Image 1 (cartoon, each protein chain N blue to C red):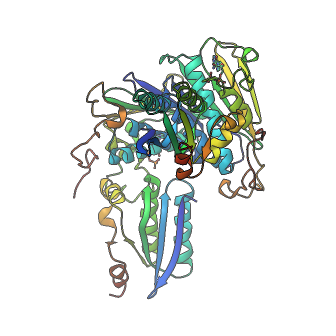
Image 2 (cartoon, rainbow over the protein chains, first blue to last red):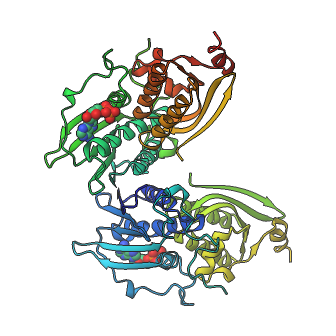
Image 3 (cartoon, rainbow over the protein chains, first blue to last red):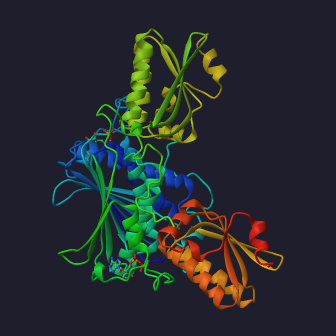
Length: 169
Length: 169
Length: 115
Length: 115
Ligand SMILES: Nc1ncnc2c1ncn2[C@@H]1O[C@H](COP(=O)(O)OP(=O)(O)O)[C@@H](O)[C@H]1O
Ligand SMILES: Nc1ncnc2c1ncn2[C@@H]1O[C@H](COP(=O)(O)OP(=O)(O)O)[C@@H](O)[C@H]1O
């Protein structure tokens, strides 16, 4: 492994069975980046939620519209950007899934999960149309340039929970 | 699974460890397409050879240059296109690896393997620069629109060798 | 199939063993149909055994909530058995853990219906 | 590591157990270094045990040819043990199968050096 930034992009048609391609790619990259098992799992889920939203709400299952998932693996940060070609939306206008009135809703929890599992999530309307979701997760900096990616310490060597802010009741 | 054509594209920086991302994606798509185990293996190898050529000979390991791998899964055919941003080359000018004088060469067998495992391989200089390799493999047509991808018969139900033309000595 | 579903019954209680993924699309739909079928046949005492479930997305979590409510509206009860830690986390994050009765032993889940 | 290499020796013959992938980059380089090291120490009787190798690309095939030739030039012999069917196919396609001595039994590979 070199220590240059690595950029990988996947483009898929708007079909549910293709979401697995994005999550499997995420798994390979997060393993390559040295994230621990829990982080790999939760980042996978953030990718699934964001790509599912792009397919379902963004592109509305229109198979002629694509979803682009870009992974940027930098020294200290993994950034994942998901772009669709839908009408976009205003995330500030969404109902709060933790409001007691909404607790029993059948949907509306995906973005909350993304925000919980990733260190940062931003929503932008892309200037050329569609929505651009950008999610970032800090990684443990690589120990020494002499070490290969395989020997990198896990991102959370203390083995603690990787969820940033799970509310414990 | 729907029966529309499915298009998936992966873009990677020119780094050897990222070739696995392309071959793993190929495996998922060939399994989804119902190819049998041998076909999955040999298509994987054709992808590895073509992407390795793009990284090594095309982009010459320049990490600022990308390789784009596009998979098109149609009803009867899987097509894989690999594009680099190098200087290109003339495939007709290559030495024949089966010529007795070349048999002991340390390299020069990749394209022969690609041609053996795929039904068709074409090399084109891309009009905007770089090389475009297009490889196609016929798949068994899906039996009936009512069947799901998981129940599709393998591409070679007779269980025979999937290599088209292995010379047997 | 991403979700495998097996049904058993014991002491008048329907046990649904789930294995695989409950995600947007196929998985969520299968779970919905299974519970609808049980309720339509008058089986309103339901144990969902999640021991074999490795992955649930937000659609799947919503599906668990909806199946819980549908069963309650039908005058029945749906309880969870063998909740994997990651799915427990997901329910907790969305303040749903207290909605569900959760059992670690099949016998305890069955006994809860004999009260 | 994509390629794992273990070395043993028996009756004056070096046995190299390979497992994983021999592909462009790391895998091919490791194999080259291992054989170079053996030859430098005067170990010119070499058995490459490929039982655990699932994948060889064209670079790896070229590496096998080159290691065979280097060993021969050093006055030694390199033979293959437990050649997996797919790698046999790859050698056949490129008309290289007859270049190699191939054994299915370790004892036979070792015995070939006692002639
Ligand atoms: N890419 C998108 N394009 C348009 N609308 C979106 C997009 N992503 C999310 N939304 C909107 O935000 C809402 C909340 O999304 P989310 O929290 O993931 O829950 P769910 O997908 O279950 O509704 C969606 O119902 C939809 O209205
Ligand atoms: N994408 C490419 N760009 C430029 N040259 C290429 C490309 N692919 C193949 N070549 C040329 O064709 C030759 C033969 O390729 P191949 O049969 O794969 O064997 P090898 O890669 O082992 O040399 C290469 O050595 C190189 O000169």
